[in-house]
Length: 153
Image (cartoon, rainbow, N blue to C red; front, side, top):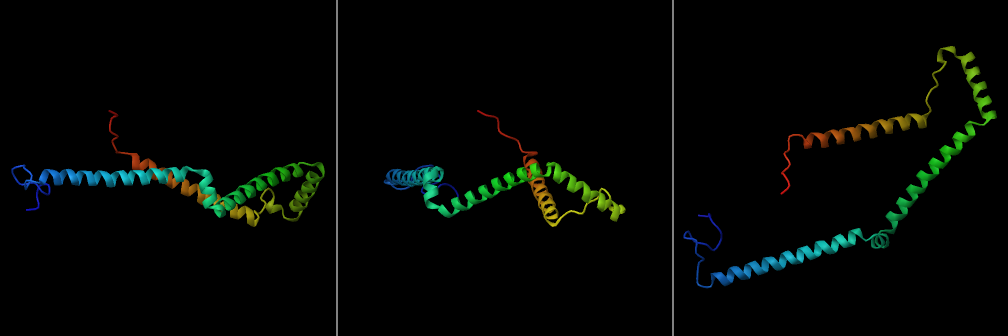
């Protein structure tokens, strides 16, 4: 009991005189459902890759992403501007004066400046990001080891 395909007896013939028509009807119904599913998947694929439609549907996300990009570009621009400011002769002289006064006040800390809070936060974030990336790369590499890929036909 429970073995074999539904509607087929042990001798391999279809049950009943109308079995062939039932089977054809069932196949047509399955094909119809499959066609509907494929059409829906195709429609969703087209919607997902339609950038203009996604912008209209999700303006808040687009605005947030644009804001993040602007902040990143502003940060890069500020870093470039600050680097140029540090290279000005007056700023170099000021930093030299501070370094010499720090050397005189605390000689044990020469060439060892204390990191600022933002530097500490940036170091922690960088370390965490590097650890996550390394872990994911190792997981991908280990998942691919030992798996045989079928030869292309």
